[in-house]
Length: 469
Image 1 (cartoon, one colour):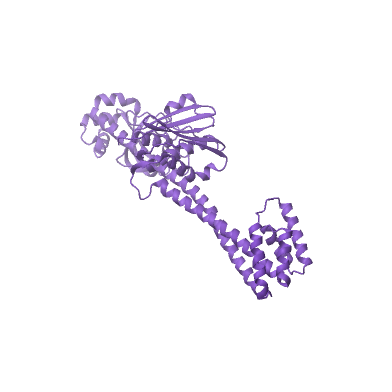
Image 2 (cartoon, rainbow, N blue to C red):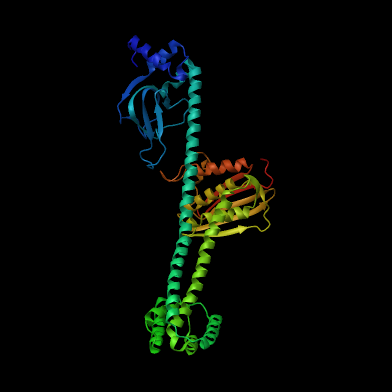
């Protein structure tokens, strides 16, 4: 601000500054000096007040209006920061920000004072109390941003798990629905066969005996070759047509799927007589219903296993601090993440049989395994070898998550547990996954380290068996 600033204008700006808490009780002369170092800016709605990538060299004191800032070159659902009249934002004393990471646009007409960061040393000398308050604002801002990013990280992790679980649950539930629809078709065929059969009471006993003999010797189809199956259908259809069975083309596929041999068909035909068609339909349908029942059992068991895994993963209805079986904890996490591992990841488990239980927060420990396994899969581009190892090491249980991905560059290995540090591209990571892991392990009085060379990255987590928490 020019030294020739009109005194009335100076007093008006000082009066406005006093309405902003950090400046409220500062001496008049110091506030006048502060105003003299600033430039007053007016930004219309939609105008840019700070731009992503620009040098971070200015502190902003918002006198009027409101602006919102977000990364315009990042993900569309990225965090939005809002500054209103009375806020002090931009670069604050002792901030390590070198470039602006967001673009701020006015949503209401903005009037602000811009104070150059180059003047901070002089500000510290002239107004030490104000400097302390500004440092406090910086601390609050870092805390709020960290909390918001951590919440976003948790929501993102939950979203990924939810999407994967939805996919995993959809497959067996869809299979169960298909099986139920097939059962309805089977029941309709059984009713039709019952109405068409002319088998007398004296022949029922013999046919039932033949059916039991066939069931006892029946084997599942060995060949999955489509051409072999079609040839078998055609052969059975010709056999049926030779015995005067109507709609043989409908019955032949059922008998081929049941894998009935020529000898079994002849044995059945000798007992069924003129009711061969409807009785074969009934018998093949019952065999199909057996297979459908097995499919339903498999599908619903898979759903039950997933629900059990979810309950174990979240430690639903259990105390937060308890004895945790590391083997079960790792296995549950692998089940929960099956949707991501099944694509091209070969998982090797090396878990000691005499592994002791540990006192830990079960759900948080599962979060550790989830983040480490998720990072490993991402590093391998969803194709590679994942090794999950757990052994006792003195008074700790050592869990090692290893992958054969490209590795972590040596120059950044010392920084990977820092908040917001990430080796992923823009929009691919928040840099909080390993920070969360580090904080959870530290909370449990544990240790975490990493060893990484191309083709072999190992995260080692040591959890004390008797944690002092």
